[in-house]
Length: 568
Ligand code: OXT
Ligand code: ADP
Ligand code: MG
Image 1 (cartoon, rainbow, N blue to C red):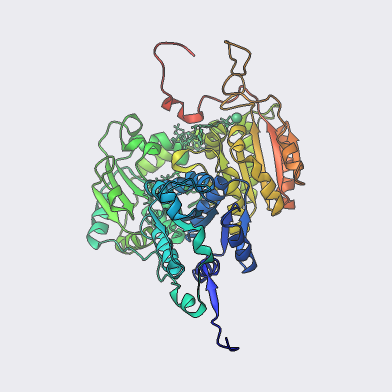
Image 2: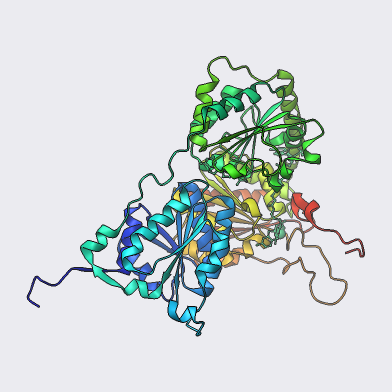
C-alpha cells in the first residue's frame, strides 16, 4: 500500500469509550477481568474516571446511587457470568428504587453459549437480566455501539428511571472499522428525559381536592428528591401551608426542622389526615399500602403525583392522579394556586405541632445519656450534632436498629443528603453508596452502619483507602444482627444472629492505611468523628454498643412470621 492510503481505524474498545464520553458519562464503577480489563485501562487513559471495586455488587450499588444523585445513568462494568451475576443484584435494586443505571457486562462467544458447548464463563446473560431491569440490549457489531449506548441511556433516565442491561460480547471489542464511519455511528442523546407536562385538568382536580381538605398532608418521597426541583417543591409546600412527611430518603428536601415538618408526628398524621398528596412516593409496604390500622378509621382521599401512570390505583383508589415529571407538576401547582390560597385549619396544624414537640421532648434526654457501653440513642445524639454542624455532608445508613433509630434521630437539612437501604431494605449498599457519594459530590460522607450491614460490603474499605476518600464509617457494633445476646440452647454453635464478641472493625481500616478508632463512650465517638470530618481522612470508628440495646428487626419486627407451634 502506498503511504497515505491506509485507512484510519477504530475498534469496539474505542467506540465504547467514545460513546460514553460523547454522552457526558465520565465515571465507570467496575471490577476488572476477562474480557473488559483493557476497556477499563483504555477508558482511564482516555480521561474517564474508572473506579475499581473488590466486588461487583458494591460497584453496582455505587453506580445506582450515582444515577440517583446526578440524574445521569451510573455505569457499572463487569466481566461475564459470575461478575455479571454479582452486579445483577444492584441492577435489580436500581430498578426497584427508580435509580438510572446501566450494567455493562462482557459476555462469552454467542455461537458457543447458544449451543451450550461450555465456553469460558458461559451464560445467556441477556435472558437472565431481562426480567430484572427496565430494558436489556445486546450489541453484536461495532457500528451499533453508538445506538446501543443511546438506547441504554434513554431507557435508564426517561419516564420512571431504572436499571438497564447492556451485553457486550468479547468479540465486539476487537472489531475494527473505519474511524470516520465509527465517529459518525455514535449518537449523542438529545433530551434524554423529556419534561412530562401534566394535563391542566389533572392539576386543577388535584388542587381542588387539596383545597377542600380539613386535615391535609403532603408525603414527599425519594422521587421528589431525585427530580432536583428543590426550590419549586419548597415554595409549593410553604405556600400551601400543608404539613409534610418526608420518606426516608426525602428527608432534607425541606429541613427536618422546618415548622411544617411532620416527621416526628408520623402516626398521628397518617391516621388523622383526610387528604394525602403523594409526591414521588409509592403506596408500598413502607406506607402500609395506604390502608389498614396505621391509616386510621376516617375516610381518606389520595392525590398522587408520579411520572409512571401505572402507579396510580396500585393499592388504593387515587381520586386525583397527576401524571408528569415532578418539576413540571409542582411548578404547574405553583402557578395554578394563585394568590388566594388559604392555609389548612389551625386546629390541624397545631395538633401536629404539639404531637411533634411532645415526641421531640421525649427523645431529647435519651440523646444526652453518656452510657458506656453506648446505647443507640447515646451514640446517635453525637452523630445528630455532627450532621447539624456539617449539613453538606452525606449520610449513608444501613442496619436494622442502626437504620431505624438513625432515621428518626438525625435531622437532615439539605436535599439528597440521606442515602439508605431503599425500597427493599437491602443490606450491603453501605460502602458502594459511600464511595459514589464522595466521588460524585466532593462532600464528606458519614456512613452509619450496623455491624451486620457493614459486613456485606466491608472489603471496600480498601477501595476507600486506595482512592483516599473523605469517608468516615461508624460501625454500631452490638455483636450481631439486631442484638448480640442470643444463645443457642441446642449445641455449642453460636446462635444464628450473633458474631464474634468484642470484634475490632477499626483494625480493618488500619490494615489499609486509614484511621481506625475504637470508641466506647459518646465522648470518644464525638472526638473521633469530628477529627475525621475535619481531616477528610478515610476513617473507621468501631462504636461499641450494648449488645442488649436493640430490638428484633428494629421498627419492622411485625413483619416476621410467627410460628404457632413452637417458641423460639
Ligand atoms: O409518630 P410515632 O409516635 O409513631 O413515632 C414515630 C415518629 O413520629 C417518631 N419520630 C421522632 N420522634 C422524635 N424526634 C424525631 N426527630 C423523630 N422522628 C420521628 O419516631 C417514631 C418512628 O418514626 P419513623 O421511623 O419515621 O416511623 P416508622 O413507624 O418506623 O415508619 C415505618 C417505616 C416502615 C416507613 C420505617 O420503619 C422504615 O422506613 N423502615 C425501613 C426498615 C428497613 O428497610 N429495614 C432494613 C431491613 S431489616 C432486615 O431485613 C435485616 N436483615 C436481613 C437482610 C437484608 N435486609 N438484606 C440482605 C441482603 N440480607 C439480609 C439483616 C441481615 S436487617 C439486617 C442486619 C441488622 O443488623 P445490624 O447489625 O446491621 O443492625 P442492628 O439492628 O443495629 O444490630
Ligand atoms: P419512597 O421510597 O421515598 O417512598 P419510592 O421509590 O417508593 O419513594 O417512589 C418514588 C416514585 O417517584 C416512583 O413511583 C417513581 O416513578 C417516581 N419518580 C421518580 N422520578 C420522578 C420524576 N422526575 N417525576 C415524577 N415522578 C418520579
Ligand atoms: Mg448489629
